[in-house]
Image 1: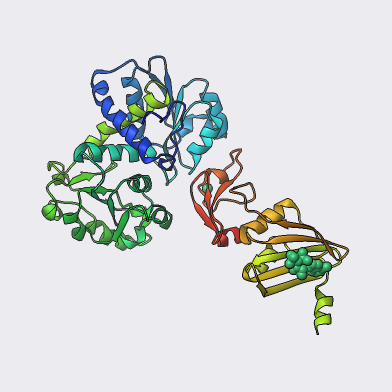
Image 2 (image 1 turned 120 degrees about the horizontal axis):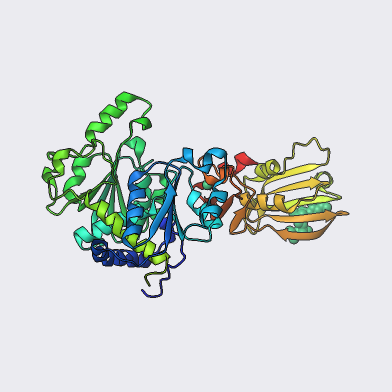
Length: 309
Length: 154
Ligand SMILES: Nc1ncnc2c1ncn2[C@@H]1O[C@H](COP(=O)(O)OP(=O)(O)O)[C@@H](O)[C@H]1O
Ligand SMILES: [Zn+2]
């Protein structure tokens, strides 16, 4: 795997990565576990700029903590109002200013493709921290890492993605990433919120995909349950939403038929799609994902900045 | 009868677009913005037997030669077409259209939230994933656009 070169590379879409490259990143992340606990000066003197044109406290904190644990510093903004955006500056210009202050740019932007576009202008690596509804590659990587760490492997697992599969930002990247492994995927959603056809087209042929509306039927078969929130705004008719909401809620009763080793993941924040009573069970891994996000991002920062080979 | 047909379809100066994928003759007319008001003879032939394609459509336009952008647009919908330039009743130039693997600038992404539809200095860019039926992927947002989406824009 030493043919993989990451220095200077942009992290834009999960589709830009091969399975070998993903495995390499996951491997580096696991080496970062120790480094994260004791701290390091691997990236001393390096600066990360986080440009968040859309609020996302968790992702921004995760990147900033990852940078600090490696001895680097962070600058940036999280409020588009106070930034130059308000004055009508283009993203292309913002990036060409900021690259003079920073060695790596982490970008969250409401428009799809914004990170790829920014990377075309920036001389420093750009990491996509979510652009539009489509891509959130580092989230998918930390999800993979969580599965690997908790189950010891990804290949051979039965994995369900549940909830809003149509608009959910994280499930598209994750479904694609998982399709590079030897897994069976269950997509569980109300019919209105089914997985987009283009995602299905993309992954079918590589993995088995089962689309389901009913959670109960799937629970006994799976090793991983990835839950996402169903947003009220997606339903023109509120009574449809109320109906759907109840049937996509994970609680102890629903989990009675689960395999012993089932793990439940969630990109957070959760609202009420996982009952709090589930938190105390061994299934619940969603808070562990937060830590995993830090080590995965440490690995990525160290790789793109050339501090790791 | 055959003599009369010949008289209708012979062009002195103009373009013959041959080997159009069956069913796409009218799309080609649309791409070229032809409404018949320009005056020159326009002949459309559909389902003509062809060795290469089984059947094909043909469009003949009197008094007009195509620019490179028009040729690229035709390639999107009729990737096997041949463009024959006619001068003084003779074919003086023959060109097979060719769909490039990347298409810059001539199409708009159908995704309103795509960065390529914003006020940024950006040129739309699509990868040809499949020629027939047409399947293009936006370089920026990844959205797939198909023949119908392309037609709407021309
Ligand atoms: N003067 C003309 N007026 C109208 N159509 C013409 C003229 N000359 C050639 N064509 C048509 O243009 C196409 C290409 O012509 P040609 O190069 O002679 O044949 P091919 O490509 O079959 O070898 C044919 O469909 C032919 O019928
Ligand atoms: Zn696009």
